[in-house]
Image (cartoon, rainbow, N blue to C red; front, side, top):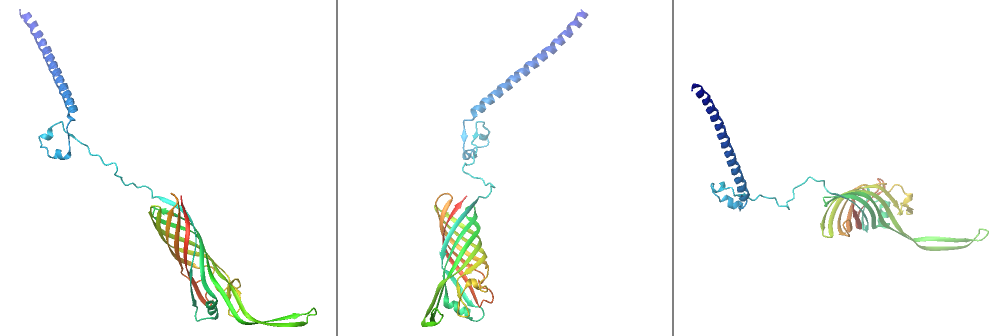
Amino acid sequence: MATGKNITEPKKLANTTINKEILELSSNTAEDKITKNNTANQSSDIKNARTAVLSPEEVASLSADELEVKDLDLVPFHFPKNVKCPTFSKKRIIPFVQLEVGAGPSMRHLTAEIEPSKIYINKLATERPFYVCNASLHAGLILRNNITVHTGINYTMVKDRFDYEKSGLTQILITFDANNNPIDTMVRTGTQIIEGENRFHLINIPVGVGYQKKMGRWMLAGEVGVGVNVSLKTSGKVLYNDNAVHNLDEVDNFYKKSLGLSLNAALAIHYSLGDRTSIYLKPRYDMFMNDWTLKGAGFKASYDLLNVNIGIRRCF
């Protein structure tokens, strides 16, 4: 009997351990099922929660307990599509060329060098300002559609009228025969008249800046700049000290070969012919900083020029 009892008790202990493991396993399995069911229920709740959409004002009016509900869905905020953020892009630069021609009056400033000399008096009596004409070819850039910079080459011709009249002249005509003997003498008395034009040919390099404003197909523009005169040539006539008329080509001591700097200002009205081409009307005023004559010429002369130009501009 003792032996049988000892054998039976270990078996009961083993069975108890096995049953305990089975119970723990069953308990874990039941907890897993409960957890999975809770997870499934939460997923179902989340799926069904997206039914209430509240505005920010309505959310602000909810209590702390009401904010704990899980069926609350806030509307996300979206930036408007028409908002443009600043970018650091390259400034727009538009190159252009323009050709213009024009004409207008010239304004001469003539003074005696020290005291009224004979040549100064003769010029006042025989020469007067006539007109000026010019042609220019410019190239430049348009920055931000408003600011312009340009340079190029300009040809300008200034004209003065020359009129000389001398009365009381006596002319003696003698006729000779074949043997070179005088056979007839005739005396004539009359007036000598000499008319012509004095011309000043200038080549300038202009540099300028401007501002323009578009108004539909029209555009207003203004510009200021400086010009560098690189050449001055003269032609025509002058009444010299001996009361004789000489060509300016024969006289080297009157006018300079170049004039230096000039200042200019202009206003323009453009009319667009298309996206890249426009025609324009532009009055321009030029003022030279230095005298046109050499020291010792006996007079000082300079000119201010007013041109009314027409032109065409092509952008690229």
